[in-house]
Length: 205
Image (cartoon, rainbow, N blue to C red):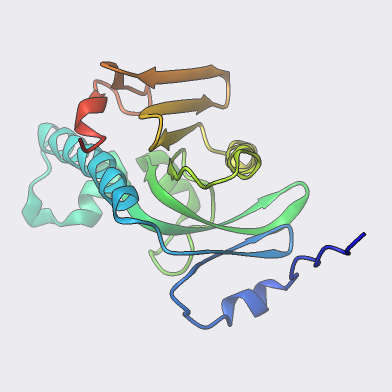
């Protein structure tokens, strides 16, 4: 029997000192995980979803009196904010006090933003209430399941897993059964009242 190589383990300080090598890095239970950059289709789907949420937030902020001249910080305080593109998250779990993940997209509602007191620098110090992950065909199912469970355990209310090959979305809820969106359905979520995104606006032909 050939011995399998042991995963590289490191401290948070060592992780923070990693050079920028063009790959994506995560620190999960002390293990360094390295992933290659995403393909263009992954990025298009990610951008389509998060841009739709951003337009929705813009409309809600304007409806309650926000003016763009007041700036994005004022909008964030009213309706929350999104972030997209390997959003760095650092949070604590019972079995992993220093987990660092890179989410494809997140939505942080205003009440969560007020509670964490984040100044915009460094990793976001909690799991956002909504996490969006675009799942590539090559991503192992066990890794996806672990990631979803870590987000929910860490405080996410919802995790959207968008499957490229199957053209469907799994919506994992911290307090409800899994919901599957496919075909002519639309993505909806109680975290975003009145938001609706048809799947044909998510997946490119």
